[in-house]
Length: 167
Image 1 (cartoon, one colour):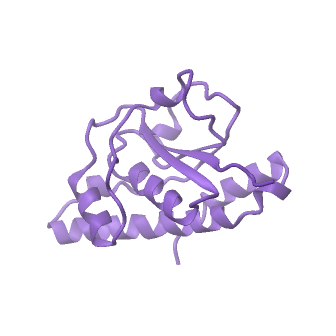
Image 2 (tube, one colour; image 1 turned 120 degrees about the vertical axis):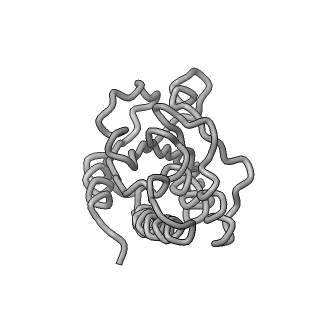
């Protein structure tokens, strides 16, 4: 019997950069094992144009990406979430909705590339750094033997991943 995919939600305040990058990465590295989503507590309403530009430059899909409220994932009929990760410090300190299904949560805070200043090239360099850090964490997460770990061990492991940085 095949394990159904785990559903993973990445949260950030604006849902325009970090959480979008994480959604794309989990869908790439966890294809078949994970389904990724992203949302924000106060979504900007549009994905940051540099986020889309960066993803296109690294050859990752951008179709269907949108900035949306975390309320979409707390409503009846929303996907049952297995994991919820905050990727910005502000969202980590906010009172989150009650997620159906008791997902495992952790904080994986990273710098906000949308707040970077300078030329587009300098900003894209920050996007690259944040992308690599999230990619490193997501690759580690995707390699965990989730089916053979208990809930407490999984919680410890995902919190530990949030403290790692890209090499």
